[in-house]
Length: 275
Image (cartoon, rainbow, N blue to C red; front, side, top):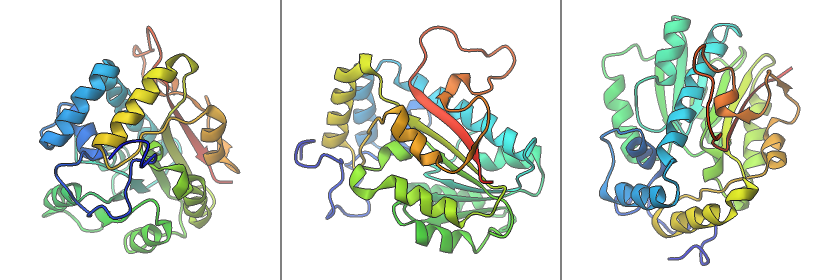
């Protein structure tokens, strides 16, 4: 198939799992030097790195942002419940590790649609308190199902931290990601938070962005679609924006001594509070 045939990188008749097709969770795991990936993911990642040699840095700084964001929610904001959609494969610094270290007893529901992620998550949860970590096999594009299954663990009468980290650019426009996010946020009580990161369009990188999206259309089941700052801001409509706002993830409250240097990677991050 080609990117022209399937501009969103997804075929409606694709099987649920095909190890010959790269998946974002496994691709991301490879960039983070994990070990849970297939040949298709390695091929895709190496081709991407030929276009974006800094690709692994995208993954690293995004992961670091996740840790800082969860520490903020668990600490300053007092959040003890988390819905992490597009969670990917278990890795050091996962949401539950950071949240429970900062606020013991925190509950985390991970959501992903990849069977390999599900298998790893089930193995990871063996022997743990079933109320502290749960896994939901569901798709962000079906927010009603996500909420229904997450409610088996989370109490939606109390504030929740909704995490959409590096997942929205894998949802094509035809699936109306803004509506999906609005449905999720509408279901959260006041005092909840939305954490997101999204690949932002860079006018200086148009050609590389096209090459990357073309590779995704050829080798991955998911699109990788950068969006403009205005398009990303729409996901935060109606929320109170936590300072410093929607910024490159390296600039979102960096740890002391970790201030970014050199060229900023156009992965934008933000946290919004539901008033």
